[in-house]
Image (cartoon, rainbow, N blue to C red):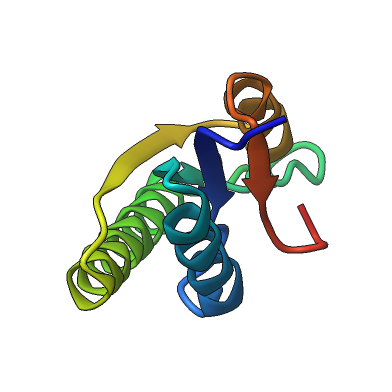
Length: 116
């Protein structure tokens, strides 16, 4: 089976290993490469009556996650320029494992970190 499409799932800003490996594999096989980052939903804890999380905390979490996504995209674009490769950027919000599984279904190979 030849590899025509590769997906790399990048969960955090420091996940450089999977991206480097995916670029190398894509170049070796002449495959299209897509990079996926999933923005996780904000963590909202409920500890009972009167234990609600303030909206400002939720908004801060969302802003931090969006900033991380921008930083990851910048790293992907820089790695693409450095390698002379074309990488399709994908970014969604939700459950990382579920969304990554849907995208992986349509790729010949998926590269990710062990914790996804």
